[in-house]
Length: 130
Image 1 (cartoon, helix red, strand yellow):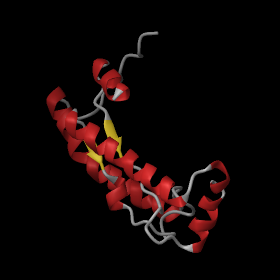
Image 2: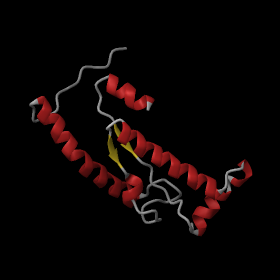
Image 3: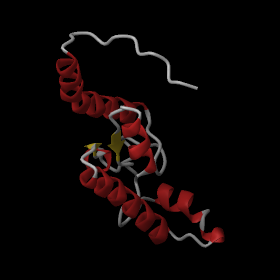
Image 4: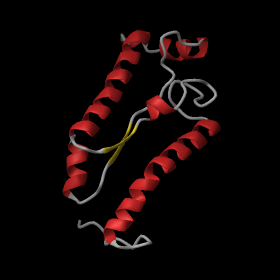
């Protein structure tokens, strides 16, 4: 919420995104092995999964409450090794998919901003005050 309010105060239109991950109900052996390293710190697979789900829900809730543009990557990126090489980091194919999702989602917003400015091309912005 602080990020959203700070960005808005500076006249910046924030965009929020959820975080996709491979923390599914029945994880594959690689994900189970990676996450098991957290067991020694008292964080179980179920706890980590619940925390990620809560985090993503908070992002969705803030976007809704503050009328902020949301790209829900958690719902759009399949939770498989085809797109992520570990619990949450994209491989090449995942990076390409996320780039397509984000660019497709931002295209109307970008057009809207340019139209509001009465401009067809972005102008250079003045540097932020220091």
